[in-house]
Length: 200
Image (cartoon, rainbow, N blue to C red; front, top):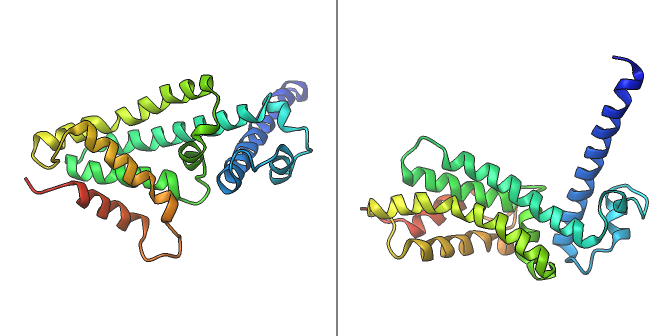
């Protein structure tokens, strides 16, 4: 391969890496300061860019917010699909899914889903519809295992309501969890599962 042929690929890789760095910096600042509190200058500085550089990748700060949420949903969807596809009994699969969701919210560097949860109102109406469509796919992964647990007598109550309550409980961990606290993420996942499951 000639040098001339290699350059465009290197440039594309660099641009992809810079975009990734920009999204991670944006997610962290949106989580820490809120969408309104994080300026483009703040984001540029955190990403090691010149103040106008983010606009090379995105037209507006709102576009950055949408990209952060989409990235969080894509990563969460990937992890949840892996857990849901585990060839284990439904009870264990459910624990794995809860753990995947908790990890997506709380593990170091995972600021994307918390931004989705807490900056939802900052989206324009059009962008909100766009994110809802992705979020529906995310939520739908939970329903088959919950329905299976219901059929086996392990999950009391209406399956759809149970799913909403589970998501509410798990997502709220982002508000109170501390890395130096009493409980590990695995312990929280197990405790959450026990809260919703019962013996057949």
